[in-house]
Image: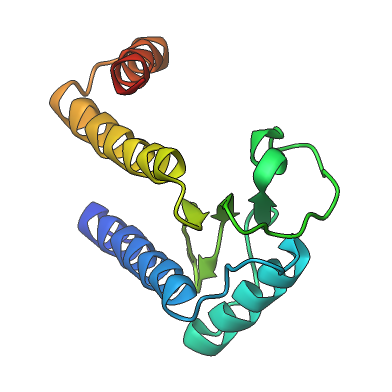
Length: 157
């Protein structure tokens, strides 16, 4: 049985809502903290997703990167770092909620470094601006959207 467009959108939005709740719980439980290896965070998030939603399947590799590893391209498998006292940690997971796949990433800041906290806020603001800009300009090309994102990044410093 083929689903309606409304049913498809509802399923995708539900998967997105669940992924957002999972990522909020990661922060609530303080899974990202100094002294923990990236691989340990990865396993903790995997276990949490299983407990919360019965998730055991991901549509792409699970990524947890701290410090200098946050600069590594997706395809690389950098060494397993330990989160430092003043670190940035990036998570990118593609959890599958039954038949629906989410692609969710978030930066987290450990410590009180004001520049790192600004960077995290700027990333969230740029993503929200990009979504809004895309909604307002549905005919935009990827190249044009990228150019717009570069402008936002330059304005944010």
